[in-house]
Length: 144
Image (cartoon, rainbow, N blue to C red; front, side):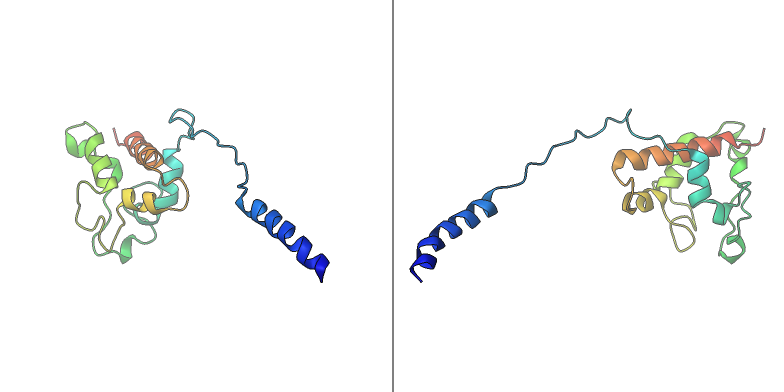
């Protein structure tokens, strides 16, 4: 019994020191925007947009007939804007700053919000890059 009483303070002290000591964790610096992976607009489009807008982006995706308002033909933005692709407007539509009936309601999510809530790449810079990649892709598929 005296052995236990004499070693108890030593054991308690060792336990206290063990609990108080924090593990050493190496801090990895946050990558700069240039170091971050750039998103491929075609991949982002296939992942998020094809289901409604269709692979050719003409508004004929597999779910298009189920929607209250038919998705637009995304290849006509420039044609419908006197031959100039409205890059800023398209970005605003995608990220939700420019409300479009059916876009952001029950028919389609506001992608700025959806991207920022995703489990991966949800930091503001990644969300911005996804939207820019998507805008660039939509610009690249405009009818001449």
